[in-house]
Amino acid sequence: MSDQTEQKFGFVIPVYNHGAVLESVVKNLIQYNFPIIVVDDGNDEKNKAFINDIAERYSLITLLVHPKNKGKGEAMKSGVRKAEEMGLTHILQIDSDGQHDAGRIPQFLELSKQNPKAIICGYPVYDESAPHHRVVARKISNAWIHIVSFTTSDQVRDALIGFRIYPVAPYCKVLRRHSIIDTHMGYDIDILVHLLWLNVPVISEAVKVHYPEGGVSNFRAVRDTLHISFTYARLCIGMVLRIPILLKRKIFG
Ligand SMILES: Nc1nc2c(ncn2[C@@H]2O[C@H](COP(=O)(O)OP(=O)(O)OP(=O)(O)O)[C@@H](O)[C@H]2O)c(=O)[nH]1
Ligand SMILES: [Mg+2]
Image 1: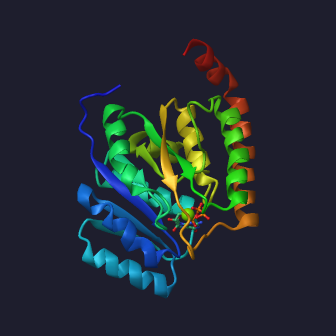
Image 2 (image 1 turned 60 degrees about the vertical axis):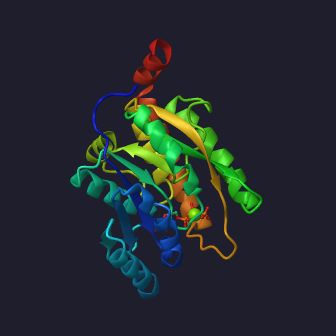
């Protein structure tokens, strides 16, 4: 699938309540010498102080600020719009809480270079630190993505992870066409399914996920379960409307 178009990579990191651990993530990215777009998603003064200090010390960082918290989805959308403005062709999304194994970045970049049109989508390999209920909830969520996108678990291994490389052009095409992409935790599912509907290929690749002791989670069980449920409900309707196209693609390739 490789083509000759020059790829310009960058990183996008949405940050909310993770100011204190952001630098440990940034340190792992500096070696690639790519722009790093950090989105301060309406953090409080304490977190802001960390973020501003880091942004001043690392010249690769472009800092975007949401004056009020808008949710992970909105933070990512702002970051990718900025990437498009900066002329980047591909962005690697990584969480700011240090849960994702940054050691996998070289493999993800290599896969993207070989398959520039594809999303390189992580799937989590948990260790014993992962809360049991989160692992179970994830399995349920992953079952739904195959229903709404007409894909199999070989193609798409995880719907929720925030460790992915996106080609910027189709991503922004989705944003321009669809005003409703979830603002919070339904976002990773929503954008992935819309890109699958656009026939953007997905390559799934493992990434270790570790929950550090004392780590801060922004996941709010009721709010975020509702966001994920509404996202899937909306995607089900979208899938029904697209059945002829999706079926044709499934049968004839
Ligand atoms: N949940 C959440 N995350 C945000 C928000 N804005 C930015 N983020 C960032 O999005 C990423 C994911 O947030 P986390 O709180 O780690 O959510 P998660 O990884 O799905 O949940 P855990 O598995 O419990 O860590 C982190 O980099 C956050 O800092 C927001 O409003 N809500
Ligand atoms: Mg997290």
